[in-house]
Amino acid sequence: MKLSPHFTLEELTQSETATRHGISNQPGPGEMDNLVRLADELEQVRSLLGDLPVLISSGYRSPGVNRLVGGAANSDHMSGRAADFICPGFGTPLQVCRAISQSPIRFEQLIMEGTWTHFSVPALDAGARRQVLTAHFSSNGRVTYTPGLA
Ligand SMILES: [Zn+2]
Image 1: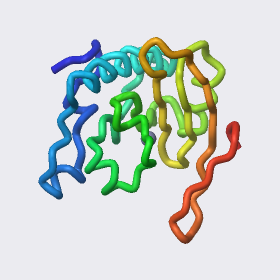
Image 2 (image 1 turned 90 degrees about the horizontal axis):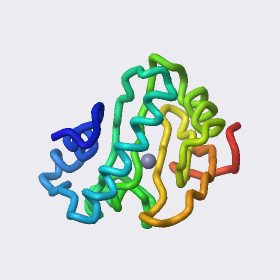
Image 3 (image 1 turned 30 degrees about the vertical axis):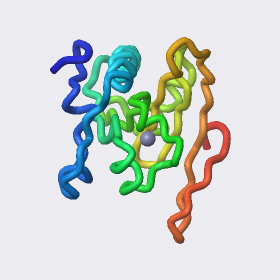
């Protein structure tokens, strides 16, 4: 089912973790509305990046899936407002983040996660925070974030 010309509900809800653990990753009506807005924003990202394929690794996460993957307790993925992706045809995640941060695209949070980009849209009727962060992964598994793009 298409949410926008280039993004489907399937790719924004597929979860290897959910499949492996046999748990549901079906969004409710509120999350569905957010996923449609997310797909619309991702269309703008895709066009900014030269209309090249944007490969989603994680979109919506049910609370159970989010817990299993170690997501933040208040993760935008749980409301269907965030997607992790790469666009190898355009460049590295750092290059992708630079392009988005310099564009007028309305995002809530943009995080350079090393090997992928985390992108989220604001809550309905909320202003866009446009927060840009870089994630740092330490050997003990902890993640810290610093402002801007390193
Ligand atoms: Zn993410």
